[in-house]
Length: 491
Image 1 (cartoon, helix red, strand yellow):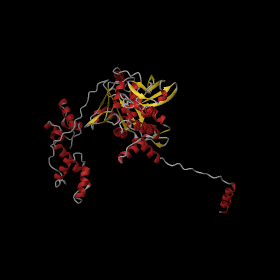
Image 2 (image 1 turned 60 degrees about the vertical axis):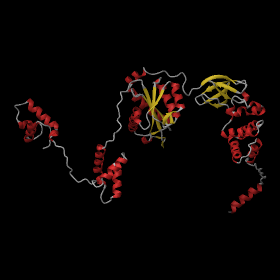
Image 3 (image 1 turned 180 degrees about the horizontal axis):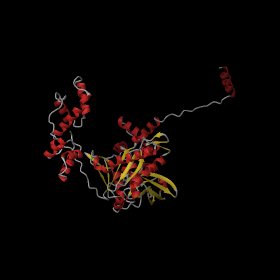
Image 4 (image 1 turned 120 degrees about the vertical axis):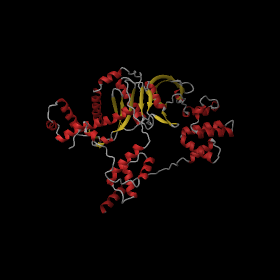
């Protein structure tokens, strides 16, 4: 009769506390025979201690013949699965192996890996401290099969969370981009009313770039983090568990959403706003269960900057006689018609809007730390005053591409006194005809070693201009419509 450790432990306990009770009674109380009870009482050992390990095989090993091949292939490809190996062997030796051998091969894989000297990565559980770090990442919701008005709704969720308190926030998005990363982060810290000193992401391209043999943060992401006074951090490439808190929360949150959809008995929503409200309710309920930890972590929050990342900084500027404005130490050219005007500049992260009163006049790209002089704004004046070009303070900004720089050097080399005049005329053509067309004409001159004079470029542009055909439409006569109607009736 087979007995469990629990039965024998009970048997010994009753025997020790009740010496006068008979063996038959004790055996009956523990659901075993008298003979079995006597055996365990005499040995004083549990069934697991009496059981001897089996060291012999109960059947022949079908893989003995090719065990060296299996080991060699597993050494070469440690992640190889037993099922893949079995299919390979079945193809090579169709009469020797079949699918019923899979379990035996899996056991052999376990033995080979157990006896190998290869080490595995160790995951070290972390003692997470409050107020140290926030984390974020995206995860796909496609497998949850949500529909909007009956139509499939493929999307991602941007997921922000605090590892210690498990407070979290989400945002529906459609790509892993810098815009969704910055917007999701801004939304989350706005709800928290503060930030933590560090923010951890994985090596996503929205925040990092290839640098040498590794990855580094992009200037854009670094500027965004600096705006909030937060230090960016990232996990090592290929080690996602270093961002483990949010990675694990992905699965838990996705499962929670799936469970609520089951309770709702429908995965279809009338519109996006209804779906967003459904998600917000889930997040609020989950965060409500973490109030104590959240309150503890709130005391560590740093204040938010006075201005949001996407909010413009507003300042007043005056256009100088050089048709240039100075914004935060950088020079930007503007159309010359605005010289001496006082403008209001709305400074965004990537561009600047210029207003006069309530009228928007111009949008110019923002290059922090660099001068942005657009030749289109000043070229007409330079053509009239070509002598100012040689020592112009921002001369290097007037070469839109390498072919323009090559052309200027070629012209000055051929004609030192007037070569720059030809170049300015060519630059004016770029403003009038389009920079790409002029650049193509300059490339042709370079290719065929022609002198890139302004007259030569002008002729090439005229040759490439499509001819305008004059179209004459004669007057129609009403009797022609009658003829058409008669033809229709006859047919």
